[in-house]
Image 1 (spheres, rainbow, N blue to C red):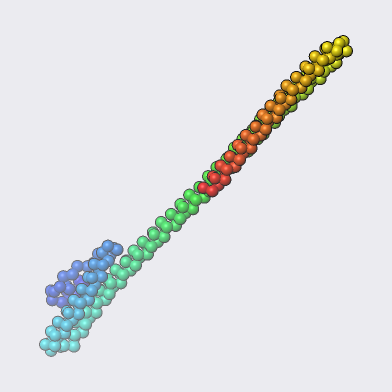
Image 2: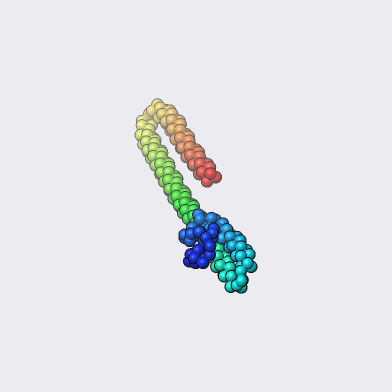
Length: 229
């Protein structure tokens, strides 16, 4: 509106031909500030020209007042344009900062969610591994007990047969010294075989025990190595 009035009250010139500014955006704010500066400089030059012109007139006071009013109007419009451009740029900077903070917060939340999920998965895996180790340990213990029970049953059966043979041999020994001698010889051989069998069973049981211990140690080393990773 100010520019339109200037165009009606002043001679044609650069200021009178300047169109009204459109809405300022962050992209056009630098140009608006430059335009405001140009308007201010043009207003000052116009005032100097008007002042020189007024000095040649009879009614210089009214002429100077009109010239000052024109300069004030254009200067005010330039200042308003400058302030509006500064406001748009400031709000644009604030919007960018807010957007950056929002992205940073979203990224932090995403990282926290991923970390919690990874920790939960790790704990679940550890629980599954521990349960599997416990199951294997229980299974190994069960097999060991089963083998021990079988070995005990075999020893009991061997002892039963040995005692039965002893009774039979005792009964036959009463009939003849030769049978007694043969009985003694059979008992000796049988005892040796039983001793060897017993020794083999003890050796086998010891081997199983050593294998189970080595297996448990290997599993413990594997768990320790996994915990260090």
